[in-house]
Length: 124
Image (cartoon, rainbow, N blue to C red; front, side, top):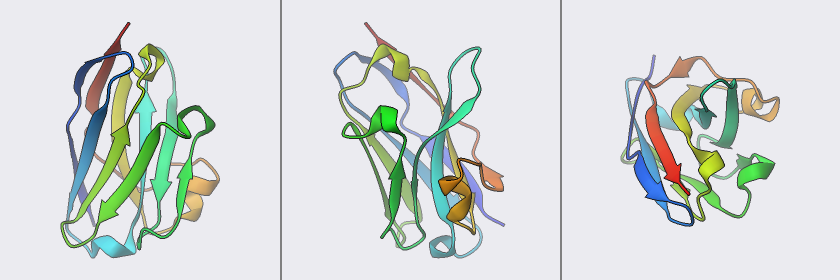
């Protein structure tokens, strides 16, 4: 069973950049695909990006393509989400999620394991 802890959220102006990170412990991290989800106030949780266990495959939601980049370092058991050209509508709690199957993210479903979330606020 893998445990996930997010970090790196904060307040940034529109057009700025932030990087959020997910640190994993327990289990063999390279076996897990990882997805980032976000939840804005009053809205449901939505998939932002996902990456396969070996980092070879990535998936992005249309609303972040060209602005966000997901990456992982299996030696450090971390997954990063680099967010550029941020917009006020990107304001949300960002959650790290992991699953043994990458397929779950390709059908926009969350995996089995969640972190506690980190707040990202983009001011206009």
